[in-house]
Length: 105
Image (cartoon, rainbow, N blue to C red; front, side, top):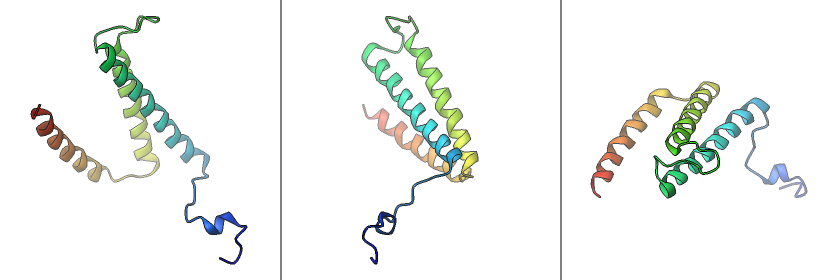
């Protein structure tokens, strides 16, 4: 490396700098994190229990967060022109695998 002080030369990674790309991915990350929180709450309290302060039923929170993630997934597919057929095939493969795995319990 000719210039060790230039970290760009030393780093093979080139982070996204496009603001709209960052917004798409950042929002998807945020929403998937919120979905994770809703899933954890359902596991701890039960799907049909309610949040003690707001009174919102965990089932409704879970549904809302799934919808938010699905909406953001669609926007990310569009923004980055992702291969929908490949994603579909992978989804079906994963569903078949998990269906068998869940049946093992």
